[in-house]
Image (cartoon, rainbow, N blue to C red; front, side):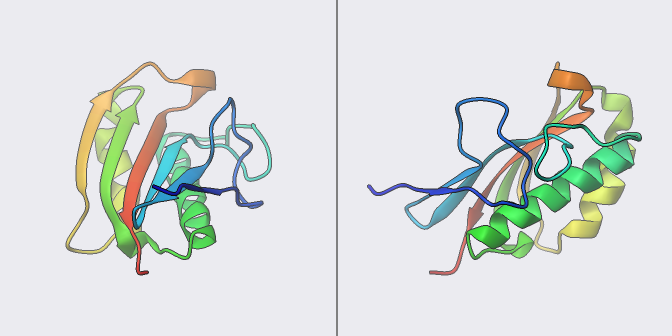
Amino acid sequence: MNKKPVYPDSAPLPAGPYTHAIIAGGFVFVSGQTPEKPGTDEIVDGGIKEHTRQVMENIKSILASANCTMDDIVKVDAHLADMKDFSGFNEIYGEYLTKPYPARITVQSVLPEGALLELSITAKCKE
């Protein structure tokens, strides 16, 4: 199987030895995204809504570099630093997606560098 890396200039810098996304078998696997400003490793200011918006914008940018859209997302793994932020997260998350919504799991996790959430996604893009 061939794997093609995706390294968009408009995404935050990777914080370790990983790729923003990998295209393989017609799917795009996007690594966990935290609310970092594009081209930096700096977390945006604000609460869960601002963090969610930045993460979704980062994912949107990565998918665009792989010739995909948010409508191509089929699976989301959501990690919240605190489940009390679930409602605010859902509010902004829902602004970026349309029905049928992707499958999703949401769990509480210990996250790096003050991030309030981290999302990884899988998309099935048009070939």
